[in-house]
Image (cartoon, rainbow, N blue to C red; front, side, top):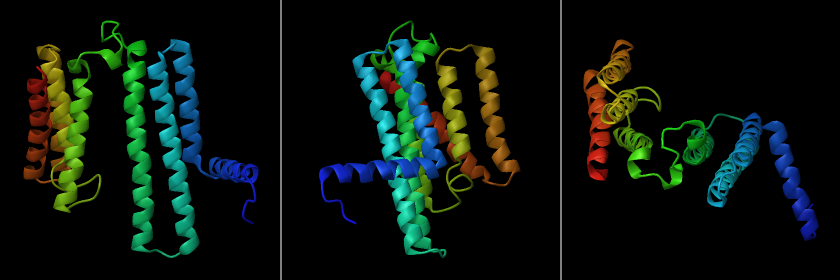
Length: 232
């Protein structure tokens, strides 16, 4: 029956949230993560701006998961048989949750990292110099470019195959950030060797060819190096 007043509409909304939390395991995980993050915010006495960002990030993730649950329920209502469009609807809704979750992780890192890692000389992450957060920014930029290039090439699956190799791009982006941060010769060589091993594994498993791996390595290291030069 259609709600007749504002109070009944609120009850319907609350009932929907409770049903989603009861039936969706991932939504329970998101609520627990939000609880943990807010607990850390109180313990570390973050600023008002930082607390606002943490709350906003948590709300966006929960909102996306609720919308994802609603779309999945509606699709199941329409058809119980396999349908390519139904699969796409569910995958895109899940992608919205993934994007908001990554954003929430970034917010959490920017706000809470200084309390766990004293790598910013006691300066708040949100007020730090651009170079302090450059490795994370470069990595995100590389990931976005990988998604765009794989979508345009139309080859492979999300985590395997396609142009370029995402594993090679990410590993070389991280290695380049470590080298440019002045970590030292030994550490730089170890990280570079690890990036080469990750890239080589894609060839051994026959997931990518040499051209795809090489392009991924050039993309990861090139974008990171360019970003460092621009910010300097």
